[in-house]
Length: 479
Image (cartoon, rainbow, N blue to C red; front, side):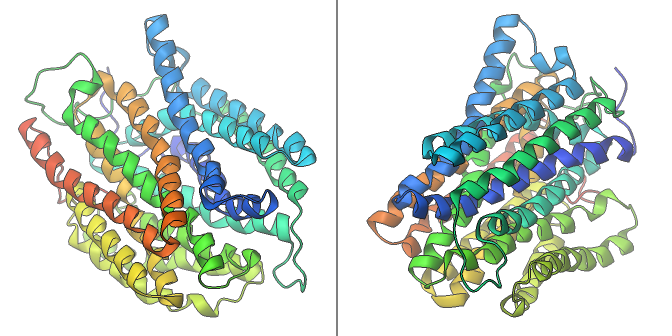
């Protein structure tokens, strides 16, 4: 088996990145669908969160189906059909899901809407199982997590644009005096999205992405432990599965409950919330663009400069997109000061993924606590800044969890993707708690999620050291 490349293969990475964009576009658009469906179908808070449940539980179902087929056929499905074919198949499945939005919108059927979202995410499950380890594999270990961070930054370009375009499709221009909500208008953007899925599937089939890339991790590190029979025999993966569950949970639930908080407690109109949802997901883009700079250069001085340029460049993208949509940018300029906290935290991580995970988890707890004890726009900015501190956690957890798995890497990846269901279940829990107490107080759920992530950062360091696995902090930011 050939050794992993010593340089990132950008010709293969670029077409792969388009898949990450789609995941973000759809996931963030759900946060606009939640208040729209709540009003259109007269739902309770917890019922409206079924949008998140249907979407994120599909990842678990998809992973289970993948593992069952692999077990029954006696071999890994992805290794058998190839990475490119698996990505194309996943995109085709997602395209079929978008078709369901047409009859769902015409018949005004909430269950059929949920079914469409489920099928779209079912296809995403297969795509994620392939794309995440593939992004790490397209180059050396010490920049693998940066490539995953960069892919995440592209994902969040989709999350920044998605809510704005879907909101425009439903409500029209934000400058309109009377914004009307037509549930049938939902079908157009999703049908266009389905056509884009099929186009990218074709482009990926024609790309140079390898069907069977080189192994990811242990050809560059020495593992002192003996190989094991299953990915579940590795404690870094098992604890990492829980970490992915609570990470996706707090990331999604913070955003999906924000519209209800702004409507009910702060008096915002539904059509005026989209820029703030966009800012939340843009915050993840800001953090991931910051964390990805080391994938581009080994020059330490240039990295330090880019650490300050990249986040504000991403922030500029957010401002530019909202300017094109004719939104008032005045409330968002102050957010530039909050970004400085992200930059300081990124520098303080000193290139260690476990340290990054711990620092950003503690900042996430701080942001939620400030949001819960304040009111008005201060609380909105605090809750929104959770996006900054979630930004680098996925690549941190994913890289740490699959380290040392070797031939079990694909299986481990599938188990991690399975735990994306936390996005739906944690959102449902917070939505239920919001009905029982208040939306403001319900963010205590996110505090608990971040607390576990801080624990995982501490525990996984001990586990990997025992296995002889270490990340070179002099060359890797480990985001």
